[in-house]
Image (tube, rainbow, N blue to C red; front, side, top):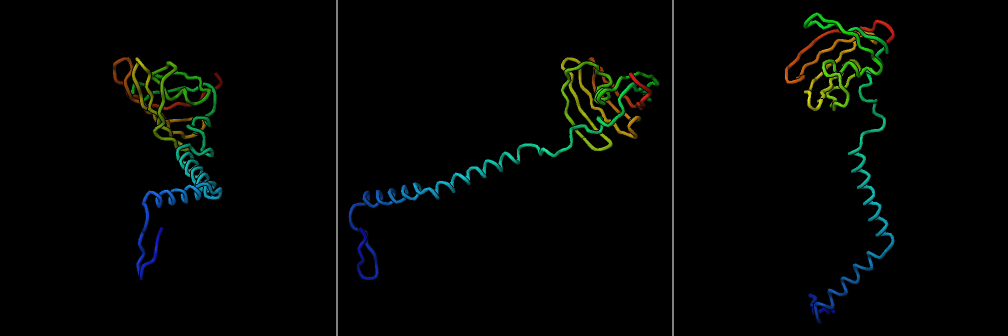
Length: 167
């Protein structure tokens, strides 16, 4: 109990009773539906903000979209480094990423993904890795640079790939 003595207030009685009354008042506030609803809304808003920042935006362009725009069919790859030529059947454009590592199941990491140029780093377990940059000059002509390790030996190649017809 609080009593007024002159211009000052004094607390009389037992502290445990005062603390119990304060605790009871706090519990009543928390039981109030409006306060609880506000706390729940705040928690959901915080969770939504966290997930919105951690998930990619749904309206993003597809990864490596430039490769999807290349004309499908048979492509002739002409390497400047040694003058060799090779045919590649292009179905998705991604066949041009792994020039030296022809096996499937390699992991890829997109380093650069621009409208006319992509760079992809890849690792083929047990056979090495590579980093390839493909620059589109047109939907039937690209420039390719790739380097890495294959079978324990380094490689570096530079060339041009041009569509020549159907596969």
